[in-house]
Image (tube, rainbow, N blue to C red; front, top):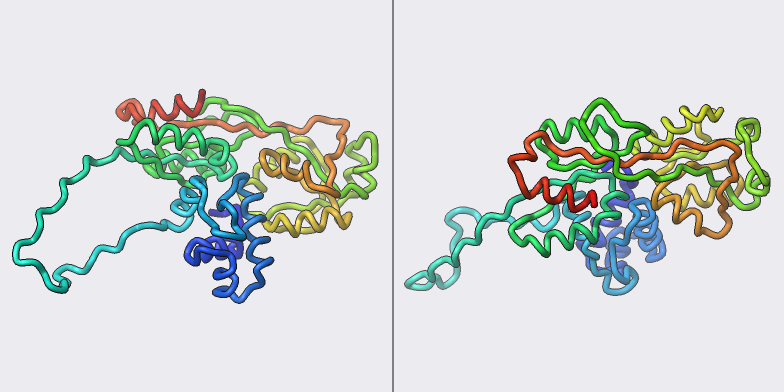
Length: 306
């Protein structure tokens, strides 16, 4: 997954393996505060909680379990080697348990914040359809990502970001999320009653890393709005680093979705009052071409869409 930093993913993986923040900190040679800050920064980037009580028992939330499976393929059992000896084998081996009927698998591809939007609906759908197993792919961000995943059978349903309806893949509009600019509350632009293009021209931009799927759609939206930003003064997927730079008055930062919501609640950070609208980010749904032959895929697509 390209969105979080490798350090955050390393902390998350070790936290899952260790079962507690204290043990995770010991294993990684970090302070407990660094581990908790890393998990908090990752949750902020994803837009949903990964652990219940991360400083205590550190139980994975349902979304956290799905994320662990999607990111690191956790929980796969390693089969015993063929012919491995067993201690005190019984004279008459017990009959094997009856095989469970196979579960139909559905792969949902979506950016992590969109998965966070659907996590309760996915849990409800699986609870009502115990013969269906839903797996998550968090790598898809753009229309190109979605088209590739659907064409190669790596996804049955794909959600992606766009500024308008793309030619490929065929998709339908789900909803839009406004794009906003944020600065530290002491920044001159944050104190202005109205901010225009000329004001922004002299302001450094803070941004996520270039490979980040959210960065790419934000860059496209800013270019469409004809905002005259130079090369970013800071590029980081560590949101604590971005927030610290904003509060220090280092520049402004563009965000949408759950990340924008969380930034708007942070002390010392303020949304800029722009005198021009920024393009909204569309969230679109695409379904594989063979979905008509998979009633469960079509049912889940409609369930999520409604």
